[in-house]
Image (cartoon, rainbow, N blue to C red; front, side):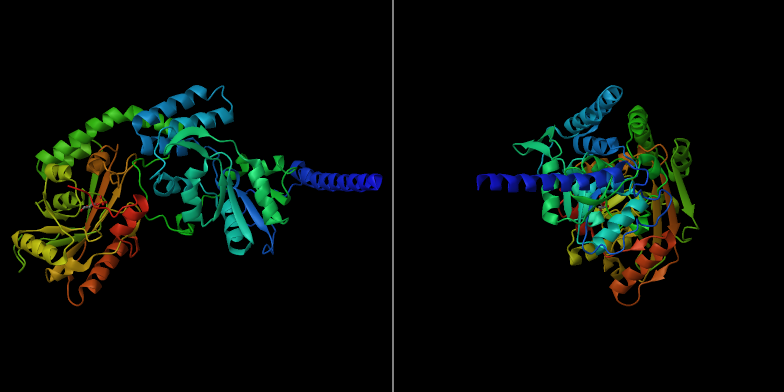
Amino acid sequence: MASKGFFTKSFLLYHRILHRNLSIGKLYRRTLSAKLPRYPSQSTSLPSFDDISNKTLVVDMDEWLLKSNSIFPYFMLVALEGGGYLRGLLLLFSYLFLYFFASEELMLKVMVMFSFCGMKVDGFRLDRAVLPKYFLENVGLEGFEVLKKGLKEAKGVVCISRRVPRVMVDGFLRDYMGVKEIMGREIGMKYGFFSGVLMDWNEDKLAQKMEDVGVDVMAFGSCFGKYSQQLPFTEIYTTTEQEKKNWNTLPQDMYPNPLVFHDGRLAFTPTPMATLAMFVYLPLGIVLSVLRSLIFGLLPYRLSIPLSSLTGSRSYLVGQPPQYKTGTNRAGGQLFVCNHRTLLDPIAISAGLNRPVTAVTYSLSRLSEIISPIQTARLTRNKEEDRRRMSTLLARGDLVVCPEGTTCREKFLLRFSPLFAELTDKVVPVALNTRVDMFYGTSTSIFKFMDPFYFLMNPRPEYWVEFLEKVPTEGRSIDVANGIQRKIGEALGFELTVLTRKDKYMMLAGNEGIVKA
Ligand SMILES: O=P(O)(O)OC[C@H](O)CO
């Protein structure tokens, strides 16, 4: 009996090994052979899989979805936006120092340590507020098509990130790509803070996941070839970095969820060289920012505009500003309604008109109010009180209102709050646009009083101001507000949304955006 049992067990073991080796052999050949089902490098067509309803796709984010394999910029964003300039500088120097002799794994561990060590776990939102923009700009269209098809038709999709830690990719994959199952490396935590220690990639966890999923698993990413002996993939698709260079970048209009809001100061991808250039430029940027602030704060517009253009900034006036004087309509002044790009919008309008205006504000920091070169007046968010305040101001002179209630960096217009339409019989819509090349002049952080300085710190900040035809405010105020939103949207080529200030702050900062004075 015992020997029979022994033989049965031996036979089963032998069968299992043989079966496994045959499968491995098959996979191994596919992985090494030139006939490997490689993804066509210059084609947008998908690998030839038709019915995938019974299959699960495992997609390696770094190797399949992203065009560039360089992950330094994501760590620099965490270091700079989450930690500050000193942390960013330390990360940059350590990276440049280790670049020539450290292994990829050591570099990764050092980058994680410098970016995360000591950062608070609670409230870590960079994966939702800052990083998605940069990941999206690096998504390859060809790789994305596979993921999209998988999410639509396959039994399941698992996205894995073997290098960039899970806390960094979670927001991007979940909110913008629509992936629900995400596996990645973890970072150690202690007492509510990141320790900065990068945990090893857990191959067993992936193997376990695959076992739960079943046998029909298609893998996308070269790394899977190495692990084909342990993991039960039926097909492996790979690509090389060279091939990915020929991939197209995912166009913005194909983002599964549009990127309306994002946060963070940096307006460029912080590669090592770009970051170094930014640090070298920073002292000059600070001088420029102070100089430009003084120019606009102290000099009349006929001097400040040409002088500031000598410092590199540009303002463009599209079309003619309205030709009339203050006090010619029944309300006293003229009501200007604009979209909101930065805190400097009313100043840009005032410069375009070449006369002072008053701007109504909501949740503006006390410092911004004090240093503002034009008069500002607070709103309360109490409709009756705000109507009263705005009517009084309008009776005294020209008034600028940004009915979106918060700034938007991308080519979208938020919902226009309709109160302004109840104040006067005609309003002048103003379409505004800005361009920055190094720093964003808006934020949701506690340091938002720095916003205008950051805008003016850019090497070449630009403003476009376009005064549109006057619009009568007849009919329901909400229709008037929507009509003006549409007019400004058409002038700028921006998309209209019904999103609000609250939506923006909830998404980026996890609060309602009420700044304490
Ligand atoms: O800083 P934001 O983008 O919330 O906009 C602030 C508003 O201009 C305050 O009135």
